[in-house]
Image (cartoon, rainbow, N blue to C red; front, top):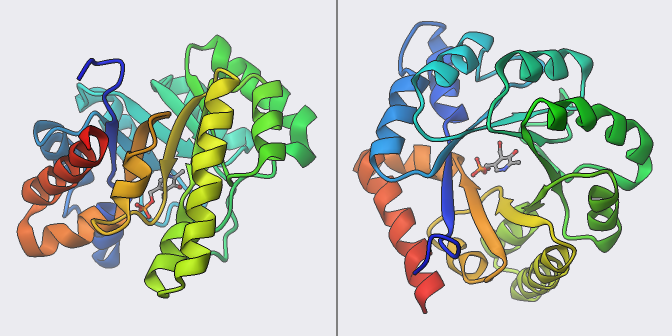
Length: 250
Ligand code: PXP
């Protein structure tokens, strides 16, 4: 398999910080998890600095920038504060996500179409600073077109609805979501956008997404960190990598 076709795995370490913050101390250390993930074959590390700092902290981002050998995908809301932080650190990639304080996790994709003008101006300095800008959106043609128009290089498709339908055993909804993700991956790729995907993926749901030839990267966190409790972080990542490669080769 050529490097061009290889499906990258970005390991999201937010929830190592969630466990740390439950006691307000120094461990488990997300930086240690990131280095371990790197050694286990992660192609990148993803971390979301939320406005309320409920998991990843400013110091974690600073530490990740210092210790990582693989690229950091810095997830953030499109706020002025986050833009300043991103411009200070200049991570490899910045993924713009919607954020609501009351949500438990990122619930939907970004409404790019409604905020096109503001977002175009918002991402311009990030691109000038050399960050690859990725926009986290639903599998919706309107949003993909808008992400393309504002100059994003990457879109990340939200796989949450597909994963929820799978968990609920709603086969029709799961297949509908999967078909939309498949069609929109191909559409975004045809516009020249690099396509990533993520949210809620686990060992049962990863393979159909990994099999889409246009998808270049999956970002996976919560399930891997949870699974690490039972098998350890390295085996949890190794198994995800194996499933991804199996789906890609098959
Ligand atoms: N991609 C994006 C843009 C996200 O916001 C998240 C969650 O932070 C993920 C991927 C990873 O989702 P999960 O933790 O459910 O695997």
